[in-house]
Image 1 (cartoon, rainbow, N blue to C red):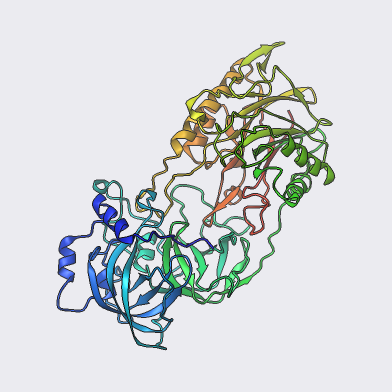
Image 2 (spheres, rainbow, N blue to C red):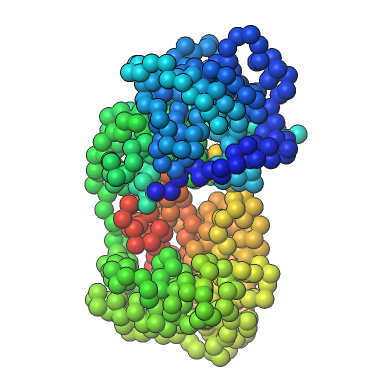
Length: 613
């Protein structure tokens, strides 16, 4: 199992680095003030900010009751002082990092001596908040079998509606030095409970069980509810304060983790220490786990296109290559036929080369595509043809050696592809006029591949199609990922979203190309689609739509249906289809077949648009 926060053995070195940067610097005055004749209590260690006033100090005989023991990953245990102070900002619990398997048991009353530190899951540059802990501990068990401190309830009444305070400009936007206001901000509320024994009641699942034995619930069942049971991330201000990650303390060999889909319910009481990790922030690590009650969610099926409708779809098939099991090909093929109703044109993202991640210079994807289209035919679908352009080796990002690219599949019984001097990886397609109409100079062709915006990223694939005598331009995209962006629980508020700059440049390049087509023919049918890796409300999408060149068709859906991906319990838009002004009437469907389910063929939901050119 993945560690909930993998730790270096050199915890002291991490603390020293953090202190040197000033990011985790505690108040020396506060530290000195806390060191007195009175014994140090856990709330003295936690203090009223995110950073311990005793950071880097030795403490002796800190008393508490063991509320949880973790024997895998980041090994250690949590202790809590049953005699709380009267300050809601100070947590009464703390994690004791042992490195080795702990020898204490839940219910032990212990005295712990060691070094107070602030561990940053993911490292100093991740932007993550830190976990206050005691490391290099000496532990004395005073007694066993004690009652645990009563768990603090986390529910819709206790978690504030406002997500986080604004970061301190003088501290680079960090909230680390701000006094916690747990009744005003959700992040402060959770932080004030860091390390404490907490509980939730019956809650709706908003993030399906993942391969790392985690799921997400919301304690606010009414908060930005998706039509199918999730929680919609509809703006940068809609972080969804009720989301909470759930793990379990018991090793999987001892207790399998439940399989849950979005819309299921985690019933009864789930109770355990509140942790913080790099894979989602605040996490209830369950000592007692509720029972999953299954809902009725089923994969969607889109409506088949009418004879006079052109159906165009996009689907990220998540690093598909011939080394994948036949089951994956068959499941994806079945989805194309049964859930997507065999669209006329299908833009695929993340088609890998013929030997997948093997890094040997192979760039052809002929075997991948032959295997996939054969699986579609076997599932009762059309005999799709394909068009693509092989990338230069190791120039388009993605899994090393995989050489992912976009591909057009099309049904030749319904639509034809117009070949125009097919381009290569480094040749840009342009726009010209043929018989008084806009045309591409290369079809298929790549859009502006030399633009630095596409460095180490997938270049857009453009092609001309003809349906019932009408030309339709389709541009398939896979914009740069969100890798490197800080999480919503970052100590910077708002979080730093460094990846946006590249996608903004990519969107501007595609928008400029669409404007070239429209300059030649303002009534041209143009579809820009793919894994845009950004939200419908983002600057990326705004740049794609600039000047009225394109309309994000997902905005035609009710807000409760706008999502193609679920990340940390937030249902959100990453995959899009955008239309040129000539495409005035269409039907749009985000076909939910993967993102909400523990069993996935891809982590993305495909998108389908139907219209009459």
